[in-house]
Amino acid sequence: MNVESFNLDHTLVAAPFIRVADRKVLPHGDVLVKYDVRFCQPNQAHLEMPVVHSLEHTMAENFRNHADFIVDFSPMGCQTGFYLITVGDHEQAEIEQLVADTLADVLAATEVPAANEVQCGWGVSHTLEGAQAAAREMLAHRDQWSQVMA
Ligand code: ZN
Image 1: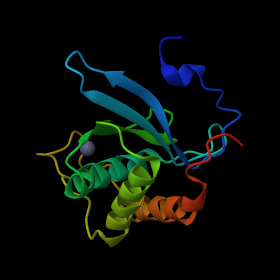
Image 2: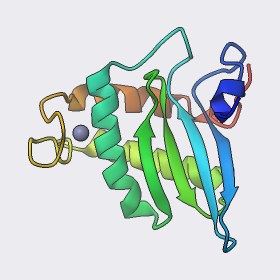
Image 3: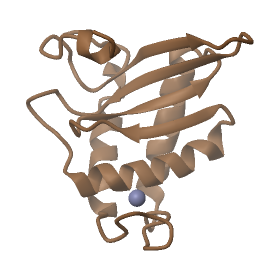
């Protein structure tokens, strides 16, 4: 199928993990890399939408304090993880450290950035506590992030 993740057998993976889902070389040689940052075991667990939303806001904002190569951080519709898109190739360890640092920012946050009607499309659909619980759980399994398949 056209979509890379549609060719991934979701019954064989072991979340949490971080894996390269796509890599594109642009016409002038620049590289875009798309990472699958998976928080929950597919079809067994998921994040509630306000948790997804608050992780999206808080991580999207804080990633950019650590790195200048972030293009996008967006949730998966299945609510089990996110896609992180970067400019250029990076070592798995560098990406894992970046995610860990950004999850630490979530734990340290006192509010969800841009959770209001001016800056967001559903400003009341947020939970900092939920995002922090998910961040804590993800960080607790950091030693498993580089292993994708069970
Ligand atoms: Zn929003």
